Image (cartoon, rainbow, N blue to C red):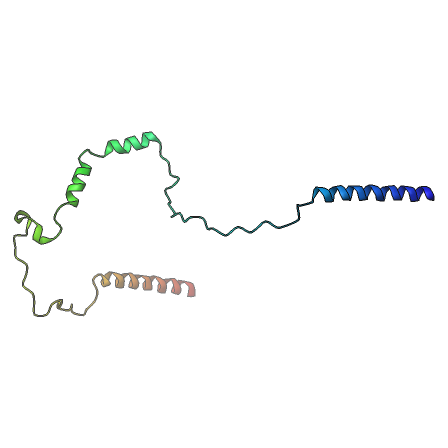
Length: 142
């Protein structure tokens, strides 16, 4: 029994030494949580659906080859052309004068009421279908 007490005492002494070593190793290193960093949102990036598109160089070269050389020059010239009627040169102005304004602007004569165009074709289809349905019903009832 004394042998068991000695072993227990030795184990307790070993554990106390290990505890003392751990305490000395942790001295000055207390369990403090790291300070929280201030939230900084990621910079906004506008969505670009073409961001990851790629094209083979041969396809791009073929597209460039198809466009005529004077195309961009014509686009720029059209963009710089006069936009309002006062700036259009005389050669481009309409030959006939504009119509005189009416006493009732925006007014037009109403169309007379009557059957719509093509209604006779619809009527013929409906009559033919009615005849077909009546014949089918008469055949079933006999």
